[in-house]
Image (tube, rainbow, N blue to C red; front, top):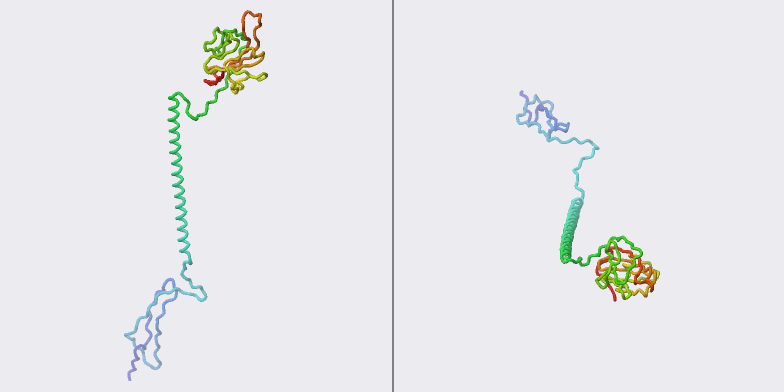
Length: 280
């Protein structure tokens, strides 16, 4: 009697083909089903023409018991808001810096233009003043250099004669009432005849100097000699810009055939400004 044919799905196990180990997992994939073993007492199993080849499963990473399962990194909450706030703050800072820089440049440029215009205006005004021969309005007077004194001792100035302070050798010259700088008039007085010339009689005991003569403004044009005594000092300012200090040493006596005045003279040339005030 021929052996019975086993039902489909039973028979000898089909030889499995070698499976390539998936990387990086060392475990080969397992078939999704188990091959049933033939029941005892049946004959040799025949190959099932409809048997399926073992199915290969996708490789999976091997996980060991107790090891932590890696999780995908999660974006922290609020990071997007913080980035947006940071970007807005940076934009505001850049805007403030750019605005401040622009304001500084515009302000600095405006100051330079204003300074340039002022300089140009002053330069034009100064040129006009020089052209007209006058000083620029509002300008400070220049400081005069310290003049050196020149002394002349024991000058006998006869009535009807005069002295010129600008001469290198100051000595009496004949003439009066001719616009002279300092003359001894026959009427018995000293006279400053030049235009802008003046005299100042200092107080008894007052020490005369260039500073004292510059500061004193008790101007007059004539001083009668019968009112002064030996040692009195008189400041002289000429219309030509010179200053002098006369120290009275004495007058001639009645028995003298000539009428004269003995004096010491100190001269500071070009030490006075022109146009000094004078009083009568």
